[in-house]
Image 1 (tube, rainbow, N blue to C red):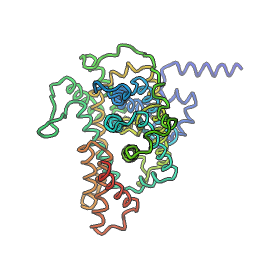
Image 2: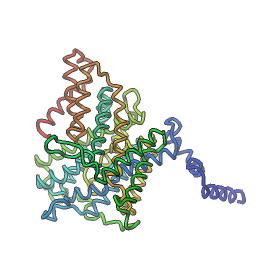
Image 3: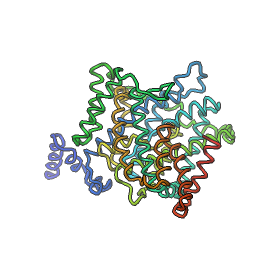
Length: 476
């Protein structure tokens, strides 16, 4: 007994002192977790994974505020209240769906990829399905649920994994680079450095604007940290930018630390309501279009994100994604869970690349991110410091890192260069990852066949050619 007390005292003493995170985790059984998450094989450690997971969370924390605003259509005045979802319930559903999906991704697939309700899909849900089509939001949630269930069936059959592995390496590199340009554009736009221009579509913003200056400051600081090789440079850039923003009253300091968690009752289980109301509104042409759109966009957004982030982290093996089926299962399950909780399609987030840039390489980073989404339920007021200007530098830097895959594309082969180029430029220009993938994948079989390389095309790519053509004709 005495020996046990001495051991407990020793552990307590060590943990209470200033020791590296690695030693603290080892004392509480961290060695087993290191083996499970393959730290040694991936060349990572707890500090890098924690900072990476935190960076990913900070980069995508905006969704906790934006998703409720979008699904409640807060910007539309005079709207019938029956068409609006409950703000507080959607906030809780958003946090829980993100936590569940990210945790599954971390534990099952063991990838440093976070999930949350997708931007774009939430706007389609609110402004097209509910507002324009007049479909009740409860029935729209049923459409999300259907798409998630179909995804689970497709994943169980192995079809989704075969599709991702059938994509040629050159197009995978193009997808990664295109997404890099896409998120860089988002960062520049969020910072006010690039703005809408009626004459030229886009133009340079007012660089004397305080928020633009704050973003530029953050970009310079982050570039310096990254150039110096500081581990977690992206994360520390976010922190320093937020601090400077508060000093100059550009970022509003939180008014309170802990807030009351809203009730999820108004949205929880609403996706199941149509099943108890005679299946009203389910078996219609409009509902079919809704489900197909959710399926298409989520499928290829997720595929693009998985390929881009794992490629950036060096996790792709021989042009194939290890444990792809598990990653896709986590994504599909998160969509089902999110629909039941009360939010639009939950999908993998490209902002995960910010965490990878900060050092994340394993699923432990996703576990950290998932935990932070749970914590955010209690500390939502603190998220007010994570403004678009604060996170913009991180997105821009991540874009720099992701376009490195351009060097792996055979640009001297025109049949490869054309679909790769169109994939890359279409993403930022159409503001859609899935559209960029669709355009590039349509041109790939065309150029390869004309070049006489038809036998090198995987049969699945011919199938995707037809699917994408039908998408542009009937849905897009």
